[in-house]
Picture (cartoon, rainbow, N blue to C red):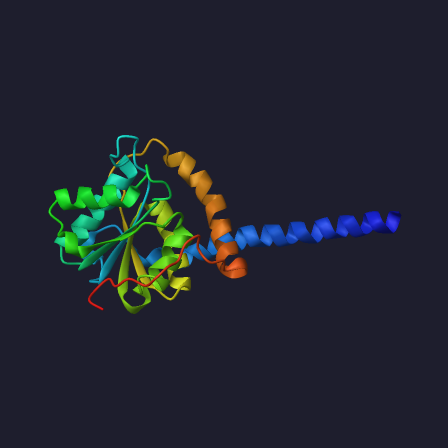
Length: 217
């Protein structure tokens, strides 16, 4: 019995060391990507595609403040000639909930040509969006600017670059957000999960499907 208890204690001790090391590593490796995150559009490198991540729509179909700022930021990149196309990725898992169509309609209202907007209806989470950006939309062949709030961008770049997508980031923080502090706490766990997804599991996203062309096929 004593040997069994020692074994259990040792197993928990080793698991604790692994967990601590994994948590530490998962938080520090993201700093490698901060040099590729831009806050001034003048500094953003000319690229091919803006990759814009969903962030919720209201019951009436309007964009949340967070998502509105992301789409507006992608419009700035397009209007400034920094990108030629915008890939909008978000959640359309239910018929009554459609982030990406709302994003598209908003962008068109601001003068973006419909033919320069591409939609990914199955971007249920950052990992899925980056995976599909490579396998469905072929973004590993182009230079990409990821668009999101600053807290999110390091994780996006880590994930995209591990899928061979040459991505930089442009910060979409245009307001003070009500849930900003909550995001920071959530991001700690999200980074750990992203590290597990990339380094250990490498699962396929919920949906894949046939390839689609960003530019002419």
